[in-house]
Amino acid sequence: MKKNKTRIRKPVMKWQSGDYQRTQTIKFELPLQFLMLCRLAGISPQQILTDFIDNLSRGSWKREGREKARQLLATYFIEHGYGNEMYSGDELTHMFSELDAMAMLFPKDGEPQMLDAYSVWREHQQEYWFNKWFNRKVSPKTGNYPHKGINFNTEII
Image (cartoon, rainbow, N blue to C red; front, side):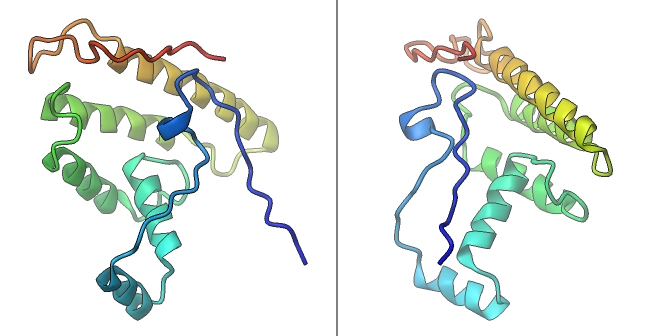
């Protein structure tokens, strides 16, 4: 019997623990309606959730033919009000555009050395992107400090 080896990545930033840990096991009850839709569509709930997360986060994996889904998920995120106390809708849209730009540079037909170089660059670029948005001085939407009272150490480990 094969062991299921889950790749556990080291945190990139110190705040990646607890609720923000990169590798997590999350247990919750799936609604029956969701399970019925999955069964009727012939796709596992895990695959749908994986696709949802990858498309929302603007991942570089399986990008072809998913532009509309990614756009609709960004709209879903913004319309749900996620982050709207700290950022305007335009700022959130801009964040998604920047994540998209990073992912579009993935060298899909690249040699292993190119893929490794891209991975290193992407890690540094993602850290820069996060710090840029997290450490803004004042939110234009609220006039407040976006993360006042939140003590995230954003240094690389």
